[in-house]
Image (cartoon, rainbow, N blue to C red; front, side, top):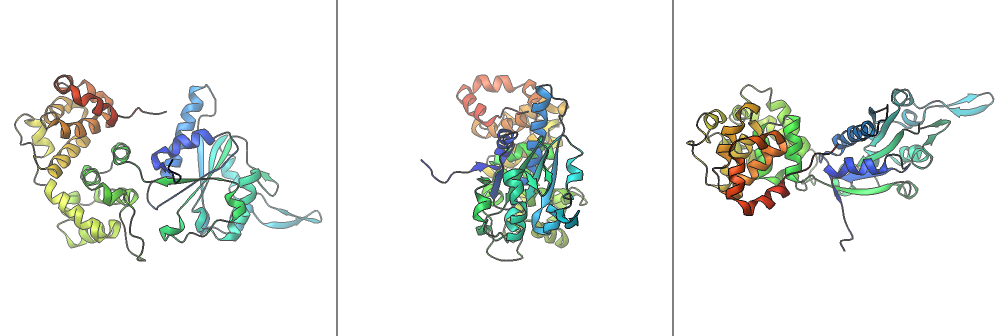
Length: 367
């Protein structure tokens, strides 16, 4: 048995579902940039969907983030003031936000970056859901997250009595296909999604954190680059040809990843365009080199419009079956309605040995 086990970051919502209502606190720890914070919000959405499915009137689950590394103790437990001859803590500042939702997650982020005094301040919350006279309402749960000491992120050792009040869960980066499914819904640029598929070790591997003040590549920094590149005139293709553009790319993902991304985008710019593929899906060239094939498949699948399902499927199914399955799975995971596109049933009929492999690539939607 593997004694050191972890969950994928994409498992966080289902773990939160299990902890909700238990009175216990999960603490998710993992390398920076693997999506822990975003997936806590997704967990709240899924808890709300579950509440709706069982007829609960309070289906909106709020999330209040407390970034402990940048807060003082009074921001969490209030002030100690004399009242009627004895000292009492004022109501914690976050209480007014909690009161706006019947159900929610109080998310203590950057937990290990907090100094010991802050850890001591929140310890009563972890054990008794109480700080001073304030008690967290029954519809609320606690959740903590942070980086590990080896991540060089300013993490401190957790106090022993604090550790014993939580369930410590190690979190690994997401699987590339899980992240691609999320990225499609989040509007991440297709070129960057292709980069993640072609260079998964660069995007999802452990970053080099040995040098201070050095940018590094993570799913979070790739998403951030996409947000800026989408507003850059002519996008990533223009950025890689401009000193200012490359400086921005390096500032998000670091020198090594920027060089790899430059190569992927340069290669992708020479492939058939989406417009050419949709216009003549049976005639445009099908790349034979693996990186080119992956890039073309991913960018076509992630750009596909609802009205272009038939020509897109015709193009994807022209690839060797072992490559085609990547594009088909990405397309169907992004939007299952593409399963009605012409050509898919014929491809399945002609590639029966690939059907089981395709089913493993497809994921059942939750919530």
